[in-house]
Length: 189
Image (tube, rainbow, N blue to C red):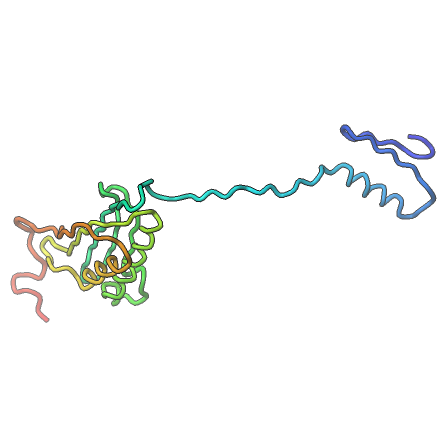
């Protein structure tokens, strides 16, 4: 370090400082200059190429991709559940209870319609264009009649642009059943 100034070696940069006149801010300026010199040069923001990510299978234009829609319509709720053709992989599942606040409305046709619309939208995002329908009531030793949401769920799927393949009733029907609840004289109102 010389009397007239000093030299700073920083990495591969050499800084030579020479005082001109007495200046109270000299020290501050010197620190600021050394700090700026030590910083790496600014890099401009690199523009990344945006790639369009398509979910679902790669298919030709106009070709239908099928899923299976399991509609379980009991008198307490309506499930609209879409799987792949094997039935092992769930694609989307929405219930009537997820779409309405009141418990009494879970099985209503309106709740089933909202659930089916949500499912159809998700299927379109994933590239599924057509659905086979498997409709189910509670079954077993209980009622074999589908609940009030079954018809409106199916109608909502068709109206939202999904092509409908086969419609099948898969309500479990017993060949012989366990005893039904209610007792020998039945449920008395």
